[in-house]
Length: 637
Image (cartoon, rainbow, N blue to C red):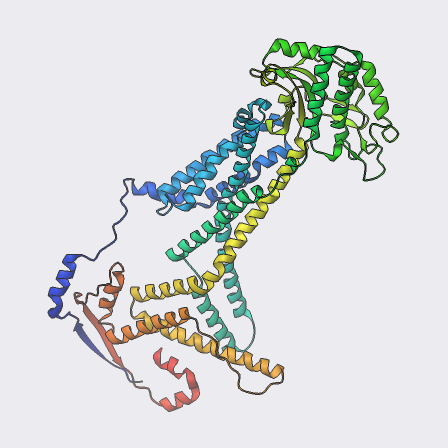
């Protein structure tokens, strides 16, 4: 080669004919978007953003979110009432951390305040108050509320459990981020594995370039369109599932409205028998009352429910109290008149002979006439003694006086029974773990307020089973939200969003350096050719495998987004060819003004210094014959 070099200097100046127009447009302004004014120090904004996005803070909030979802159910399933203060402390700590996160997000994130996720976080954090056992005990009135008040408390708890699903939004956002990260890592690993596959050099090189091109089309930083679409999709899915959770349970007839419960019916029968006994004071009336009371207690036998199966049952058609999930553990009188409560409790004791006779009869369940298809089961010896004693246990609470006896008064171990947590009074259980049954038939409201007979049921088996199903429901809803959100957005991302973000990337590249459009077009064309050749090879091999001979049809339907992307590349290349390096400054200046569609060609010129070189290649025909299609690479490089 014999190179020769010349040095030249060029000056690019705009035409003065349009100077007035440019100045008038500049005077009118370009309609720039007003910037968000903030009175906080930039360092505060930066620190808030760093703390919220820090991995350690994310891990802490995620763990607390998991606790907020399952902590209350774990408390009910695995602990007793004595452990409630520990869970209250954890719940309050969780609320404080969530409030801190919301505050930092409001300060550090521009698009968080007053957004959909802001309201979700506020609601889910406020509803954590319903997990505080102190508040639940206050709402339940110490277990003495009944009727509409009890139903209202149950509705509040149910709403709290449904709204708890809102906390899944944190898990969903984290899962979607991990999912996109894993997809990106999968692409990278696939590209690296493709490089390491042995084979023909040119094919491996072509495949690597195709993979690199596909990697460039993978979403990098989330665009505003993508963020908005993801937010709207997640919002629709959350609202849909919440609507189903709220409405579906109401669209059915409750089974409880079909027949009266045995507990309510039995309480009315015992109250009626007790009233007749106190009015008549005959031996027959007293015996009827005692038998009704014993039948009620043995029918809901707390100790039979502790056994794994019905005692003495040979088949599955025999039932006992273990077939149900609520069992009586405390019997007595409740009212606001302490004197009347004490008087009625003194008249309600059962003779020891009646207790022994009843126990002897239920000991032969299949032979007796009282329980042919239903086994009452036995009572421990010391509990039989309690049944025949006076009702002197005082469990008064607030303005209510209580006198009665407990069927689980102390810890003991006898035969197949073992009690480790005694229930001397109803307060030994959580308000959600007990149910008060009181007679309502032919009872005046004034008498009901002064005194009434009450039966307290241990609901722990039911509550634990309900908590277990709540855990499964939360897990199912979490999976449904994640899968639905990803499935709904996957097609939109693949067909629209990712191509649009790829176009945005191309436009950003051209805006930053207009001359780079030529390189983008060359790379895109090269990838197209490689893909076309690969598709042709695969199609031919498929036809040969099936024994078909003919021309393979490699044409596929072109999407509008692909057409738009190619058009952007071509327009950028034509701009680079038309304006050249001297006009690149004009293109860059106008492309940066994205807030206005005005084109300002009156850009101040710049001095361009360049080196022009000329090279003469000897024996070019020989080099062409040897290098073949690689000769252009040799010449250009």
